[in-house]
Structures are given as C-alpha cells and as structure tokens.
Length: 228
Image (cartoon, rainbow, N blue to C red; front, top):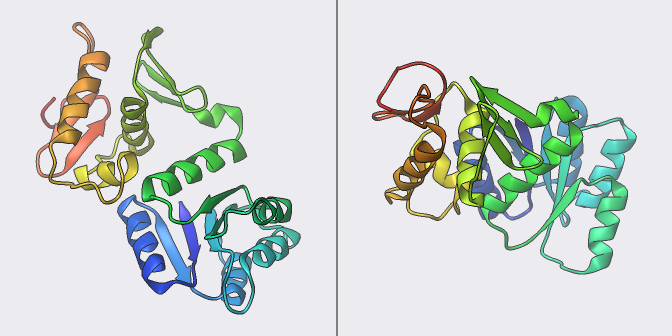
C-alpha cells in the first residue's frame, strides 16, 4: 500500500516509516497537518496514519477536510489521549479507526489490514493459492475443501505469506508483521511457526505450498523452487 505517516514526533515518525517500509509499503511522511492535507489531496494514498496533534492543522481537521475533498484512503487517527470524546471526534470526521499511544507496530499493521478489508468488496477478502483458500474476515483456511485449524499466530503468519504470494517474505518482515517490531529477528520462532504451518497445510499427498528460499525467506506458492 501507499501510506502517508503524518506525525509530529520526529522519532516516532521515523520508527513508523521504517517499520512500514520493512513491511513492504511505499511511505510518505510529514510532521505538519497542512502538508498532510496537501499530500492527501495531490497524491494517491491508499492509507494514512495521522497524529491528532500537529502544527498547522490537527489530525481530526485533516481527515474532515480530506473526506470533504473526496479522499477515500483508509485513515487511522493516532493520539496519546484516551478520552472517548477524542475517539468519537475522529470517527465522526471520517477516520476508519484510531490508535492510542503507545501502540506496537504489530497493532498498527493489523488495524491497517482490517480497515483495508472493510473498505473492499467481500470477494477481496478471499485469498487463493492453488487449492488453499483463506478467508481474511472469518480468519479461516481450507485446503481441498477441508478446514484447517489454526491458532491466531499461525493464521497471521499464513495471511502474511498469502498476501505476498508468490513473492517470498523475509524473516525480518514476518517478525514485523506477525510479532512485535521489537522482537529479535535472529530468534528461531519464525522457523518454528513455519514448520507448524507446514504440518497443517502441506499434508501427505498434497503438493507443497510453503517453500524456504535460503538467504531470502519463505514463499507460499505452487512450484518446487527452493527447499520445502
């Protein structure tokens, strides 16, 4: 996705931009509300993460004016305030969701995915790779018509692989998307969970769909490239 990050805190903004780029998104950034509105008006953004308190124009006003101009991007309002009236004001202005600081990169990415799914037709919530079908709304998976029982973490891992399919996803990107951004990418946890998925998806008699590409990452696809 093409994502705008409008955040007054420069350190936080740099962290968010880096995390979103690692996750494979094209990111523009600003710390000013007026500049954020200009980027939403003049550039094709798929989503925006807007701080509620910015110089020039606050996040709620940016969202309201952008919606008045016909902007249909997914918009998340980010705020350090937890009061109900701030959340209500943002949602009434046209925000799709809100995030209360401090929040993890994992939560941000999950909320972006959820908001994007809500904005798309129902058919776009189904992903298919060969005879594997993944329902993003119901968070269910079937292979050859048979239900696959997955934990929440396993489903999130499968979703990340399916969204990128047939392209490979690096371990670092999977850590960022499925686990907290601060999780140690050198940990063996990704390999462990990929093996859990293989045992449930690549059953005997089925063509392997989960492939390990040494030095690159993991891919969900048909074919024999890499090591299964």
